[in-house]
Length: 113
Length: 113
Picture (cartoon, rainbow over the protein chains, first blue to last red):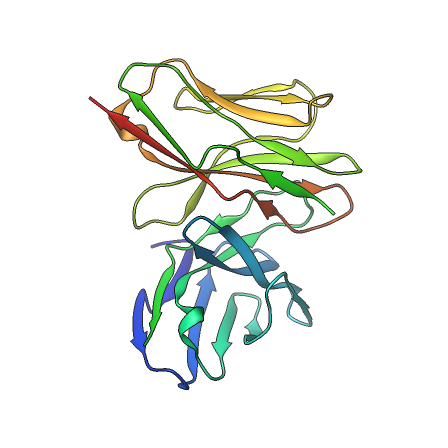
C-alpha cells in the first residue's frame, strides 16, 4: 500500500460545486501539505499543517480550505469550484524540520467545467 | 524569501549522452537543496538532497548534483542518460529556520534513442 494516499485520483465537476480532496498517510509524519501543479508553473503551496492543531496558509490559499482531522488525515476543500482551479493536486508529508524531504501522493487530477 | 529558478523548461538529449539540468536559488540564509523527479502519472520522488558537508551529492541511479554557494546553484548532472530517465525534474529549496519548500517550475528531460 502507498504511504501517502489521495482520493479520488480523478474528478470532473461543474463550476460552483463543493469539492473535497482527501489525503491519508501511514508514514507517521506530523507535517502535511497540499500543492497544486499547473503546466509551466511547477508546484505551488496551498496550505500546510505541522500538527493537528496547526494550519497555515501557503502561497495560493484563496478559494481553498483545509481540515486536519487526525495526524494521518488532511483534506482540501474547494467551497465553490471555478474553472481556473482545474489542476493536478498533490498531498505531501514530511518529518520535522526543513531538512526533511517530502513524500508525495500520486495526485488528484481535478477538472472543473 | 527563497526562490528557485530552473532556466530550461525542456531539455532534449539522445540516449547515452551527458546532461545537465540547471538550478539557481536565491536566499539570504543557509539553505537545504533537493532534486525531485516526476514520472508520468505519478507524484514527485526525492532524487537527491544537499543538507551539509560534501558539496557533491549522488543518487542511486547515477545522477549527481553539486552545491555551489558562491554561484547559488545546485545543477543536476548525469554522464550518460537512459530512455527511462525521461521525466520532469524539480529543484527545491528550504531555508534553515523556515519549514516549507519552494519549488522551481520544473525541467522536462526528454531522452530519445
